[in-house]
Image (cartoon, rainbow, N blue to C red; front, side):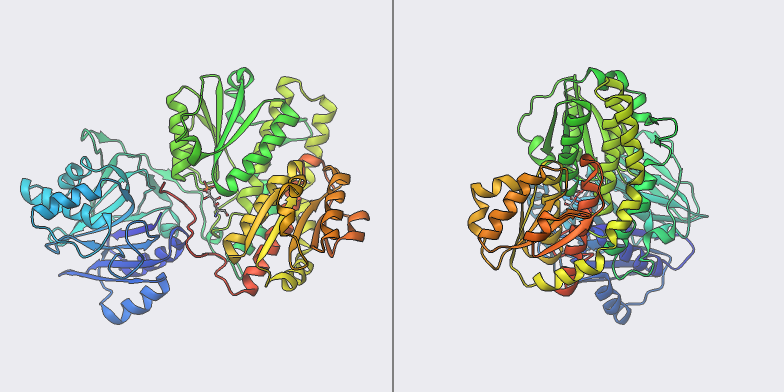
Length: 615
Ligand code: M6R
């Protein structure tokens, strides 16, 4: 993970870098640092803690002038979060300085060789090994920085997005990428570097996303030069126009990004089906499916690979694809899939779901699937991300930037895309009548309004949160389409409030978790009208007999659950397959309010990062 930012040009680098690091803090926030070249020497400051801590320390410590600089916000992999392990790192001579996002897997053997050659190390990081390897190559071969970086990287196993400069050549920054993202903003005689485009969006809309195994030399006032790291071949720069705007990456009056993103769901879902769902014509148009329809229709099965919340969206999709399109689906944790020698054939379709499009495990899973001949379809939010580029075809969720570490609108928009796909395939396969199909389209179109209605439970959810905020365990139960929503509700609570929570299929409760139930235990039960309602009501009765506290998520107008539960939160009625889009809303709000009441860092929970680009 980690966020990197850099600048070379005619402006003061410091304000660009510090603001950029704040925007990238979702990628890691256990330590931060900056190195600036002030015209004479490198000024470097770094610290354990957040970018705000760095800002406070640095402005008392070093001069912040200079038109070249690099900065880093860290999510620790090698070495605990402390001042010394923070980036940037110097080479032994103090001439070179580096920031790095990724992992150098063979750092230990490289370090031993460098120690044998007299190098010393201050930190426990793999990054300090890399900068000294670059220095060693540069000195031994008496070559320029760019060439030294290239030769060193050819000895490295692992993942990286790096930016390096040399205090003796303060007119250039060398950047390179493998596995971790790296965007270059192109201004007038100036370059911006960042893990995503958000740090430079107010300066330029023109960006180049480096591909894996590419490096670039950014010289003040000169055209960019991009080369392949392996064979030195020159690459034609592909400059993209960014669609992002500043408003999308700011809090817009909300206390937290998470809350803003929860409230953005009606419009995000609308954006997801805009241009794809044409209910008047009774059609769904998705280029990624139309262009590959033969492949989809010939597929023996669909394998979904994803992690975390995206994996939960995959589980919902399993129910939807099997129910509507009658295609067998397997849902896999990407991290398990890639390491268990899975049986994959050329007739398989692999759907990779990822908000960031950068999750290392998911990326590795799709590379494996492609190597076995499977067709890979990416469902990503971040446009131009690694997974989007690596997939054979795909569909973006168009949710807009999600900055809170806890995924919210990513989940509901992923389910929306997957529902559109299932409906389109159901129609093509003839597993749905045209009236059923039309009915689904019309109902899907009402979902943004119904999500809006579900959000109106916010004040009541807050009072429920207040009652249970001190509980140490929560159970979440759901059946059918809403079983994955129970998992997602539990994950949301765990990750931002640090309260232990488990999600279970409601009927599984009697096979174990029921032993946990006593009068202290809050149990959130999703009991909407069409989802095996009577069965879930029986499960609620079983909880009631054991004095558990019941928070029911019910369909508007419900009577039976109201009689049994301690609290009920209503959501509007919809088709069973669409209920996850509504039942998830109160669960997001519940976790949000509990975390705020417990004074936790909602947007940047401990130990987590938004984009997990390491294994
Ligand atoms: O970017 P991705 O969707 O691939 O991320 C996958 C998980 O890391 C992510 O969903 C994670 O579980 C979130 N923190 C959940 O809120």
